[in-house]
Length: 307
Image: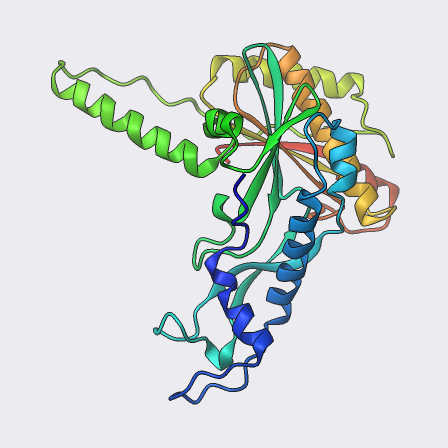
């Protein structure tokens, strides 16, 4: 099982912790950027938690073992010099902060009658200018709510990876596109069908502290399901939110449960689109006033296409 969790961008952290300086330059004593240090601490804890997993554990057991408070870490680092091996003032420079949570993102899909869920956990580093990608995430794969494998080198993960890995999906799409172009050269040109007009999806709302769908939410989602069944190629991200009452951990869990409830309703309605679930909890509110009206607006699930 692959254990190469920490990406090359964290190499600067090793120099920093050792108190190294870069000779022949005017760089100062090496120190870690505070946001980079938070990312490193979060990733180190996640790697330790992954070692506690065992095949056959329930989803609840996995989530409990991987539990971690979200941190505002570094979502994108930049180099302080054109010299790849030197950093400005001896440390990686954080150019974009990001909320890093556990799991970082999730994806749900079905294959051969099994309902799979991929939980992708942040295990360290970023790619300069690209931020956090699949290279910095480790997948934990559940089948019918039981742990069946984790790590990109696991056979089942390798087989199903294109269903939830953005990088692998892009590679598969590139290969398929190349094959299609080769066929097109030998066939007469055809007029491609018009791309579906993607309209903004209406949010669905929830009662306080609950993830159960209301009758109005079901009616709204039924309309969304009809549209998605007519446009099965659209990839949909389902974002779950909560108001700010309660702890951050509680609201992140509640937001994810709401998003998962929406995913389940759409799947039961016959939607076959790729559906990715993510819980934001109280983060990214649409309203910041401390009123019941505002709380109601934040207790929602938002659907977006193309993510």
